[in-house]
Structures are given as structure tokens and as C-alpha cells.
Image (tube, rainbow, N blue to C red; front, top):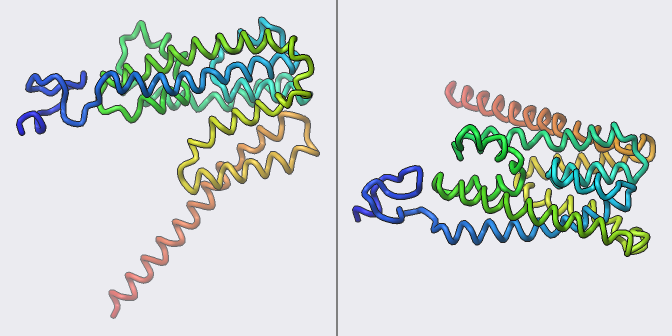
Length: 261
């Protein structure tokens, strides 16, 4: 009973000296989960390599994107806009705005991981959707650090290797449109995005963004509809606030009426 109620330390061990606290997660389980995510997503770098090469980027440019940018959604958005004939600056702007979310991830992860200052610039390169998804649910700081490190390392190595293979193989494949690989970019992007849409508000925002992008696609230059689809977020937030505000007002009025009785 003492083992179950002993307080946890940040390294995951109980203060009483037991090797594993109640509710803590074994290191092997954290590593297994992290490897599963890293390998599954890392292999999709092949699709990016093929798509990037098919959009006209050189082998060096394609590999540099994966090495330096290393955020799949932004990379696919960039090459997707370029392959559609979009302006490079517009394509880069769309990729940048998609990547801004990682800065917010970093604010939370920096508190959770509490890494030494010399390591933080290096760790920042691995702050992406997948490492955040694996790290945040961990019950202890030790487990969070293991999950972040294993996911980041596995995904970074595999993503860059498969990007290289995909870019090299694009020449052998010939016309990527003939193989249907032009659909790889939106397919992988949706696969990355779908698990993040957990609430009704998030699903409505995503649906409205899709409608905006599709509606504006025929009348605006490539890449611009993606940027303007971001307007879906403030619209949904505004409408949600109005609904909640209206509900609160009705609740207050009802309470006042009941009180008058």
C-alpha cells in the first residue's frame, strides 16, 4: 500500500525508493510507442521526396527541406503549391503559417522536458506534431524525455533517408502524375491532420477551411486559397463565442425568473 501512495519524483520513481511508481510507464513501453510513431510517419518521407522532385525541386533542395524544415505538413504545402504553379513566396508563406503551430508546442514541451539550455536549440528541431503527441501524455518527466528523444530521432533519420530515396527514385518512375503520386501530398497531409481533429469545433473549422479553399481555388492564384482558408478559425471561434454567450444570457435570465418566483 505504501508503494501505491508514495509521491512521484520527476524521474518517474517514487520518493520511497521503489523502482516504478504507481501510474508510471515502463521505459520499454514508452520506447515501443515512440518507435511505432516514428517508423510509421518516417516512411512517408518517400512520398514527399517523390512529390518534391516531381514539382521541379532539385535533389539538394528536396533534401535540404527535410533536413532543415522537418515539418511534414509545411513541406507538403510548399511543394504542393509549387507543383500547382503557385508563386514561390506565396508557397513559402503558406508553409510558414502551418509551421507556426510548432512554436506553441515548444512552449509546453519546454516546461515539461526542462532540458539543459545547451540542448534546447537542438531539441527545438524535433518539436513537431508527432513528438508532441507522444510526449504530452507521459506520466513522468523521464518518460516524456524518452518519448520525445526516441520519436524525434527515429522520425528525423527515417524521414530524411526516405526523402532521399524518394527524390532519387522520382527519375526512375518518370511522370509522377501517371503513377498517381500527385495525390500523395494531400493524402499524407490528411493522414497527419485527421487524428488531431478531436472536438466538434476542430472538425467544423477544418470543414469550413476546406470549403473556403475549394471555393477560392478557381478564382485565385495557386497557394492563396490555402492562406485565406485560415480565416475559418476566427470565424468559427467568433460563432462559438456568440453561441456560448447567448446560452449564458438565457441561463441568467432563467435564473432571474426563477428567483422572482
